[in-house]
Image (tube, rainbow, N blue to C red; front, side, top):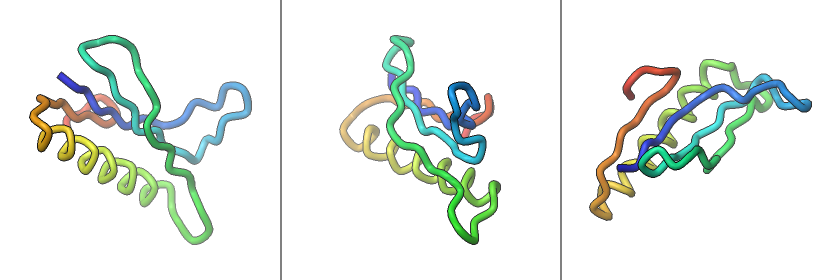
Length: 79
């Protein structure tokens, strides 16, 4: 099982508070960052979140196409 999750980037250590992380975990083995989407000129934070969630869906679709079972979440909710 591959778990794909979207979360807001932590502000610890000078992190960007206007970024979202797309991360994966395989059978609860810990999280690995795959993509980071940040606010750019003309974007809104809501738009960045939508883009991150869409990226997670595409990533998971590729995993499913390869035969893996996936679970997709964002902010604790199923995508």
